[in-house]
Image: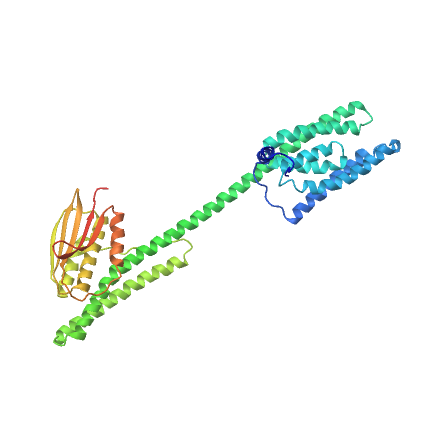
Length: 410
């Protein structure tokens, strides 16, 4: 409702008051059936009250009283479109209908519906205005449509006041229960949404871990296959024994790579079928105890590897990451400069940080096998999880250096 004839300040003040009075939880939307039966009930209650009270002692009615009854019947029809606006302006509609209900009996049903709608929204400030007004107008109605017994008028007024308060209290309780149910539904929906998000995050984390393991293991195996296949292609001076050894190495590493790839794909397929992401079963992971075997394998392929191990005791969780760092360093050295020596150094341990350095001299102009950098990215993620740092690049001494520092004290 807007008052174009009022000054701007008065209009804005009225709108603020109206918004404050209409404040409260929004009522849920009604479908066509819900709206229809409410309006039918409004008409039934209104015209039942009109007939029961207005037609009482009809033989003694004057002409003016019959005219009032006719107008009353018409006002009951006018009240229907008014009460339909109760969800937009609950207080204003309830006030207007309460004022009409004090004079016209056929508006009784509309008054009750507007009061119920206001109470169900738990609008206490609006109820503080509407309930006294409804009670007062019921007394006015008793004056306009007086019963035969004056004492009965006061009894009817008191009963009307009690019925109004009780009716509003019941509607208020229904609204509170409806709000509680809605809150529980929203909480359940939010919980389901959070659960789905956690499951999606779990699946993504599991895939990331599997992809990291796939690169760590398969890159090492496939680089060995590529190196020996290249030797068989370009080395015409290899003896029959050397050719058989290279072919056997290719076969062994290819089979191991296929086996590991099959296991990883099986885990991925299992997690896709599962409703809840389950952690993939981890195979026994290599640690620093397996570094000598890793170095020996590199040496059998012709690499010159020097290892300096001054590290003390290292926890198992860090030892696994340390092994992967050395493995990645040797794999990159074999891909980019297979004929250059590699040095591996471990220091620290115990109460000190573990330092790992894999270095190889740079050879200007040497062809390099391109890489995607995924191995170093995965290693950096591993090291960061331990609170450490990982650096790679050319050093001041002319070497390409892969350097990591991992704290052991958490």
